[in-house]
Amino acid sequence: MFSTQSTTKGERAVCIAHEVNQPLTAILTNAETALRWLTRDPANLDEVKRAIERIIGNSLRAADVVRGVRDLARKSPPVPNNLDINDLIRGLLNLVSLDLRHHRIAVEVDLAENLEPIRGDRYQLERVVANLVANGIEAMSMVQDRQRKLRIITQLDKNGDVLVAVGDSGTGLDPALIDRIFDPLFTTKREGMGLGLWICRSIVAAHGGRLWATPDLPYGSIFQFVIPKTVEPNSVGSSRCRRTMRTNRQIEGLFRGAPF
Image (cartoon, rainbow, N blue to C red; front, side, top):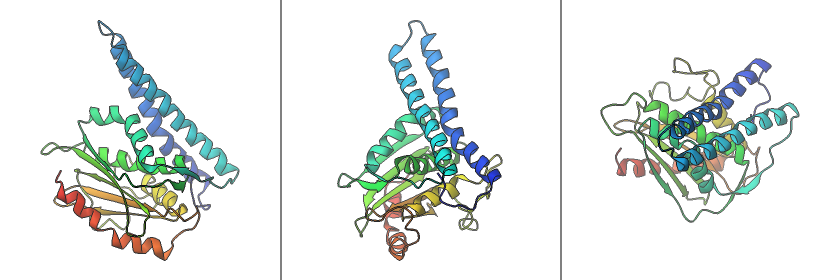
């Protein structure tokens, strides 16, 4: 679940609370939604069915958190599998669709069709995408003067590796703090734990990749990560990944080419 072995028991407990909070909140929201559809006259059973399906999906996400904690206690290494990153993104968006509608957020998805399966831990990479999406939702929660829009892009970079970008039209990033937002326990949120982005970067690094953030002008932010398809987990910090980070700045232009 976490790539570092230096976390204290207290930090691990906070990490567990942070990770399990999102699926549990989604379970509660979908359960309340299902009850509302059931009490309508007539009841909308199709919506009830969809809400229950999301409850099941988020229950599995919570179970994955517990499984990750168990593996951490046993010091079990992650077991990589072939996975379709586009399929992972579609499934995650379905699970959080109610939250997106509740916050009146439009979603634009541009998933490259030429992506081959990558080697990775599905649960861990899903946590990365889920955290970035949740951060985008929160960043747009107070926006009133423009459309709230979340955009997710996948593409092959110049090295043939898989790059994922998540952009929002929210409040943006403070350039003075951009180097600190991935530090453990650093947060600018009133009720934040300062662990979400740290966990994301640790997971991506454990897959041999890099995660970085840039402000999007005139507002919003873009988070990007790259997963080298030929690199096994725990191959951290390769120079190839650093080159990929620099050469994929062009994806910022894709976001700005379709203004929020």
